[in-house]
Length: 209
Image (cartoon, rainbow, N blue to C red):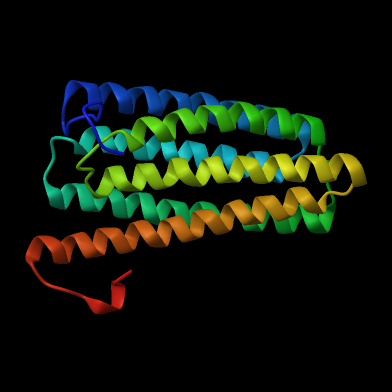
């Protein structure tokens, strides 16, 4: 987006926005963990881990505002690697539930996903209103977009769980969330890599989008 309402880089408004987004993600992560436990849902727990990692990224973004470009790239790389690790953990939990069985609650899944979807949409719009985003803030925006898409998947899975009583929709969405995280992590690492070449005035064709 563009216009007079956009937030200037390193401004007090930007810091306030990041703090708001940070605490919203902490609250949503806690909600996902609590509801995911009682709903026996891999998808909800996956999104809880996802939002927890998001909160860490937003904290890193705040710390990076006044840091060097090299420090910002390092923070972004940490975020990308963390997403890859998170994806592996979610896939492992989905496999365990497939083997041992689970009984996810469709209604609880849908209610939590709707609440989280609204919060994630608010976060996404706030981040999109920032201009001249550095590599770390671009990573934060990627995370919020991924979260919003994931919430839609949970709602669909919840409906199918209610209609069929099967656990596979929950597992499929959990693995899909992991796949989104995997793609997001790779994209963030690629962005950090390209930022290095941009600063140095060089080009690495192997990472071009």
